[in-house]
Amino acid sequence: MKLKLFKKYFFTTSLIIVFSLGIMMMILSFVLNNYIAKTKHETLVKCCDEITDYVSGVFNSEADIDIDGLSGLVGSLSDVADTDVFVTDENGKVIVCGCAQWQEQGSCIHSSSVISFAEFSGTNTENGVGLSTLGIYRNAHYVAAKPLYDDENVMCGAVYSTASVSTVSNLLSTVVKLYIASAVLPILLMFVSIYTMTYRITKPLKSMSEASKAMARGDFSRRIPVMSDDEIGELSMSFNMMTNNLAQLEGMRRSFVANVSHELKTPMTTIGGFIDGILDGTIEQEKQQYYLNIVSDEVKRLSRLVQSMLSMARLESGEFVLKPELFDLRELLYTIVISQEQRIEKLGLNIEGLEELQNISVNADKDLIHQVIYNLVDNAIKFNCENGKISFSLKTEGKKAVFTITNTGKGIPEKEMPFVFERFYKVDKSRSASKNSTGLGLYIVKTIVTAHGGTITVAGRENSFTSFTVVLPAE
Image 1 (tube, rainbow, N blue to C red):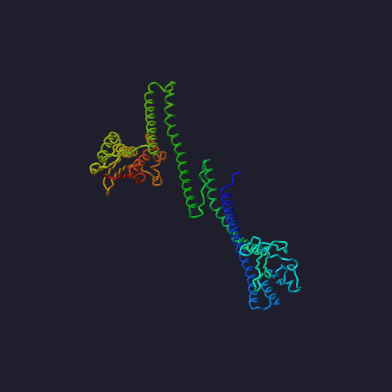
Image 2: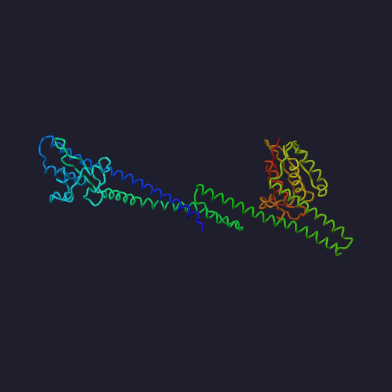
């Protein structure tokens, strides 16, 4: 079973912390053990030095050793240093001991055995201190020893100072327990913090994973709550923006498929019905020419639709490459208006503003700009009323060429104005009457103008007029 990201992150971080604390504990134990052992060694050596100095001072004064005074000194050192200090004669027999049993009874565990200084001094010692039982103790002790010499420099005994190894271990154990006890609360707080942080980091990622699976199933309703203003919060916002865009694209895709299906189905049905009627004799001979003309119109309509869809696909995919050239925008407009002269005269439309147009040159793709102006002029004629009016305006504003075309007619409802540049806008009731429209013209127009770094806007009033304004960079 695969571990979730939350578990991986939490357990990995926790193991790192525990491992780090364990390493710190080992280092601390090592340092403390060395420090305590070194301190104990120095204490044992100092005890021996004190006794040696005392005995040497007595011999130098040519006086006899005061056993009671020596016993008091040895006892005091044993109590203060928490060690066993005792003195032996030259034969290794204890003559003075600082332990409580000796002080009370005159004999103790140390006096029960003969201690050979030569044997101890031959063992491995470090800084005058070694590990030994001295034949007295069951367990090894730290032992420091120094010989005693009389006034003739002849060895007359030895001084021993011992301490149990367990005292050092007990002290180290106590320090370690205190360290662990003091670290419990910070460790708990650390684990809680890690848990909380891990949860806050992984929760949005888990939500994104679930949302991604939902999107794969076609559900774009999931959104990620933004819980912070850090990188995770930015990622959540970016994911939500991506989801919104994908939802919009999915809606556009479905709308596109539905609209294309509708646009293709209607003429295909018409064509199929009339052709079948001619083939099976349902349509009389004298009427076949009339219906064949209708079929021809529907075929042309299909051709326009396919051509518009191909243009749209090229524009959206970025496959087309602009081929800019310097040309006169006014001359191009004249050419297009003249090509529509028959349609204009048929509807009795009045053309205004052509004579006042400025002579403006632009550096753009002439064929694509021709398509833009042609579509706008075509719409102005198509959706005008009989004896209506079309007005043209062409001027410069700074380094921009501004072209405006205004036509009378039904106009566009204000609430539908924001949607006129969408694909298949002709399905809107106010503009679906004409079979010559594919509903892709204005979408293609806006795409071409935007590709040239320009803008196109629409204004108007229902049952009055419609006005389109194109702004392009002027030469």
